[in-house]
Length: 442
Ligand code: SF4
Ligand code: SF4
Image 1: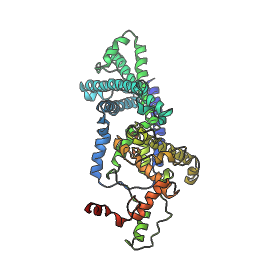
Image 2: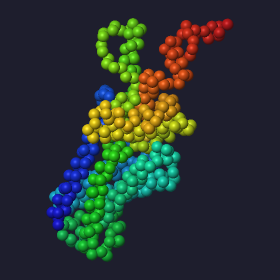
Image 3: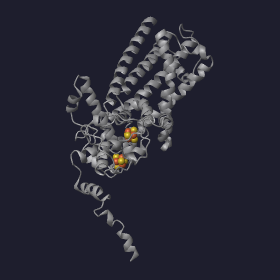
Image 4: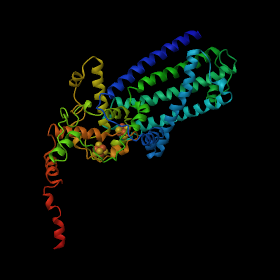
């Protein structure tokens, strides 16, 4: 019986590893569809930013209570995985609590701490479910959150509660089996919190207890394998991607825009600031129409989005009733790159994949109405807890509208012309700029 369980466990582990690694390769390939971008500068500043934002969850503490609750779930996720390591070793080798002999009496303290975290995670998940579904916090109920995104959030919170209950139930049944001297269940003592569940099971016979312990054990570990695979399809991918995303984030001041090299070159040539070296810049493409025109960092941003809506909550365009939502910009970017990746996995070429379905800049994904509503204030970038830059995508898509389609409103075109000719948005000559001083001198 024990050997059958070991074989079944190894098979489950191999199947989970196969599907997870396949999905991870797919996501990495999709991110690499983006244009190159170098983010190798200032490694120590980047490391510090990553530690503060991703590891320390710095921005989450802008709302201290929510930050604390999120930290409990996060710490629970990280630390309880140490127990999962023991479960995996026990599953492969048929051992029982393999770390206990090495840790001695400290083992009970460690498991007690994990149980404390498990209870913290259960309480926090219940509160988060109430916030989402009963209190109806506005940012969780914007149009882009209808359907699957809403269910995704609820599902993950529910799965976490089930996983934590499974661990507590397993520990309680295990402690009773130890007390009864059952074979295989070496004595390591009762645990801090699950001991209070023991009276509920004390009347059961040993066979039923072994059944409960095994169901708890399998439910927990199979749940974790399924969770690990599910996360790769869900907004919870940020658990992993928040780290590289924060490390490779933009280190320049928020208001600084990148010039387009082709345009800079043309302007410098026109102004006689550089010699024409005859360098071939290739076919110039201005801005972005689809995901392959964005950088790999834009695409990593999309996969890292937690769909928390803090950006949309701060967006003045959204607050004043415009259609624009920076969260939707990120969700649409992820959905479109997933769509292109799916076509590629079916054997299509990149050109064919991009032709199939609608481009990122389209009424199906991000429309002109949404893009034109942005005032480039950077509030969304400032608010994001995982250092995502929705504005960069908006600006690239708008560059496409302005420079490839000449699709900007007439009032904007006048402003562009004035900047180009007068070096100011207003329609007067630069030589008249200081006329107002003469008025003062009269
Ligand atoms: S930069 Fe644009 S999208 Fe971001 S908050 Fe400001 S108006 Fe909204
Ligand atoms: S872009 Fe950032 S702030 Fe906006 S929903 Fe995604 S994670 Fe939250």
